[in-house]
Image (cartoon, rainbow, N blue to C red; front, top):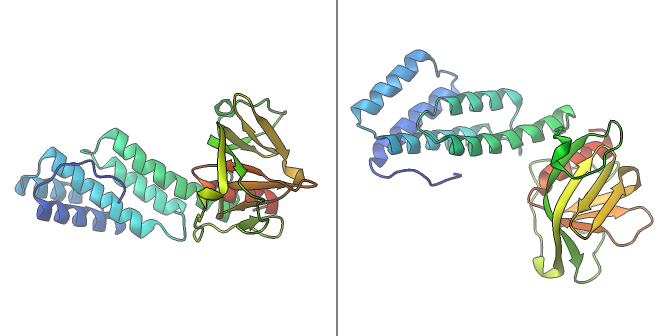
Length: 252
């Protein structure tokens, strides 16, 4: 599902190994006896290291597809998936890290939406002069955007007080021809403010002054009270930002 980094050959045996491993993981049967059985199967079928890595990756893909529900992964399923990754001894650590990162994002979305728990990031990740007690919840590379015409307010998925954002059904239908790319920089979001910072541009909005945010029809558009034009920022993960903003603007 995610990567194609592994060796080829013995496709039938790789498929069988992956099926066995995935089923045992989902049935919570990855005990010592099963692992011995899996090792014996690999030896019997003469699976090499790259073939085992490929089979284990396939198992991870299948388990993920089963556990990923409604746009996120709950704590119990995330722990099960993390335990599976620990047993994938032939996968490279970098590859396992990427699988775990994807699952971790899904689990973070679950925590935000269902438990009201926001991800706290190291404040050093964003070049911001923080206020006392101010927590950093999100930061990422971003680009300042300018609309080619006048942005149509309310055209995208609106996030506002009384209009919470739900994870899982979001689709981005951005029309890139309607926007001009500007400065590259960093977007950041705390419990009190939203901002964008580049070498030449610095923009900040107080959360208390944020009328609404929109995603889905273009970049992230942040409408500040009393201002007609939004602060528009292009990001990679609109869903995560939408979930965090929804929590902050709606108390979960």
